[in-house]
Image 1 (tube, rainbow, N blue to C red):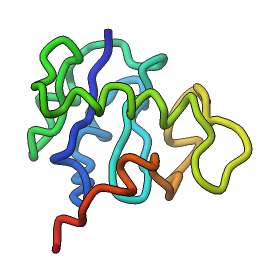
Image 2: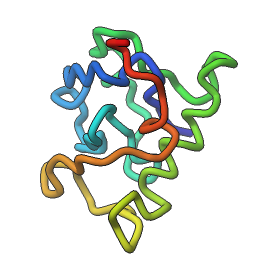
Image 3: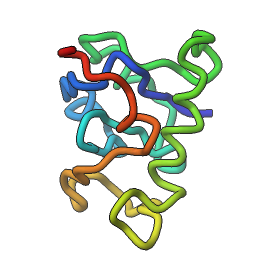
Image 4: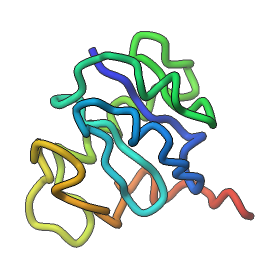
Length: 114
């Protein structure tokens, strides 16, 4: 099981969760953050730190957020736009830095500013 970042993070990318994650498994796309399901240790520190209430334990995802479970995994397991290979599990977001692209699902979401 893992934690999942949902729609409330899109275009907000608060980042308070990143600072609390003890295993550095929260990666930054262009419009959202993503939790690597293979690196997450299910501690919940990110959820309590999230100021926009965008993080859910996967078993508690509301129905309207279920698509984000597969999408968070796709960020790591499928090649992102402009990349030839998946990001995979690089062992920590700090070493990767801002990825700067999102999954097609998040990239296609309406902008929060209009």
